[in-house]
Length: 345
Image 1 (cartoon, rainbow, N blue to C red):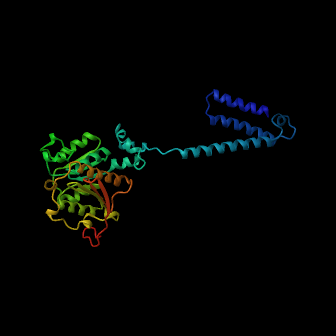
Image 2 (cartoon, one colour; image 1 turned 30 degrees about the horizontal axis):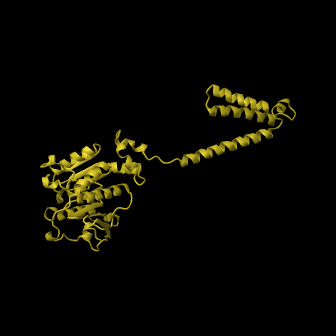
């Protein structure tokens, strides 16, 4: 028996010196043990070769069985370790979506459990339309661009004037008299050169609304025009696209997600008709706190990120109201209105 074990050790050592793979060395040792067992099974009792190799095949069979158990244990342990390895969060299989150096800017997103690599991929592939590049559109556009939304459309027919700069932070003094959509495009590209910006310098009308909105996955409405709000609501309901809606006046703002395609109410369920002009004055007439659009517009961007990535609970069927004067927030539940002519309740 000592002779056979010595031969096995010599074969293994010689294979190591010759840099043979371990699988090849194991095969050679296995052939040696197989030959020894065959000798014991074929030759008669008392044969000199059997006497020199352990006298009986039983000992070698026990040794072979023990070696097989060790091998099975190691294979099972390796599989368990592989299953216990943490999943990659840097999405190597999705790297082709991003150019070199782009992922570094989203590192704080990727480490978030609710977003991670898959969430950042969804943001990159998303197409978001923002209606209005004013007080609410400004922070929403900036944060959507910084977050890595791949394609952002912005529609507005207005130009920047000095009275906008107190709250419309996407525009600068140098942009006065420039179309807002082009001023916004320049700022977004300065923040994130990897995104696509589609500026539309025109008013949203019935003639173009369906075709334009249909190109996007999500719409953010930050306008202060009720005709536009109802038009946007009608088209998003018709196309089954979620609508993030924000509004503000003086010291108070509100944000909600209208998504009848997912059992939520639409804008018209909550506001069946536009209020009288004296009950809903514009910012120019009633005034507005400068930082307030930043708060509400940023909330709209947060809702957009949640809707795109599936993180958390969007404000679907709820309205979040922020009172800046008293530092209070509250939420109210919104329900479908039976017989709503837009979404049929």
